[in-house]
Image (cartoon, rainbow, N blue to C red; front, side, top):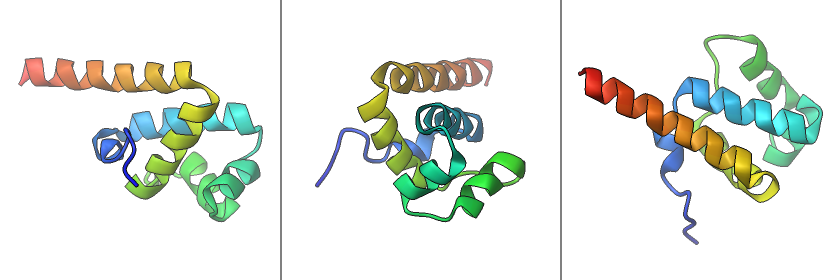
Length: 94
């Protein structure tokens, strides 16, 4: 079943992915709870948080977007609009 966020994760920067993760951590309170919701290990979530060369994959970003949209649509939209603005700025400088 397609959703309105299918394919969106491919266009979100590492910075945006980490903002989504931070927003989920604020909602869920712990990395372990985020991991449970994504059906992954908490070590994966801790890796995203603590290792600058790691970040959520498109698949995980897609799931995080669905959760954030359901739980905090305002924050969901805020992050996506900020991503769009950054992208527009970069294009205008090109």
